[in-house]
Image (cartoon, rainbow, N blue to C red; front, top):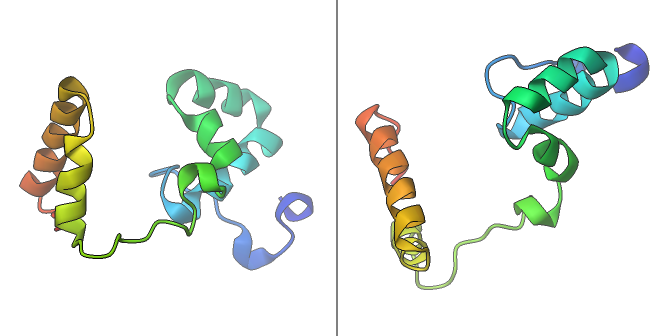
Length: 107
């Protein structure tokens, strides 16, 4: 791990969520340090390889997501939802409602 990461304070492999901001670096460590686990992870977690490759790029909005002028996050979310096909929009609304139901309201 030292040869891969370098600094002791960066020795971190998150087992809870690979897709949180700090955890995406762990994906690359799995790929390098334990290729067998990496193969299993990619086989079971949709988007793991994509996230490992593109997590800190413009493709994933890394440090480039800003709120458009005249919008709140709530109004921008509602506007964005209206641009989606109905089935996809309803899927996101269900996810948002489930998150709100569990007390993780983000607006």
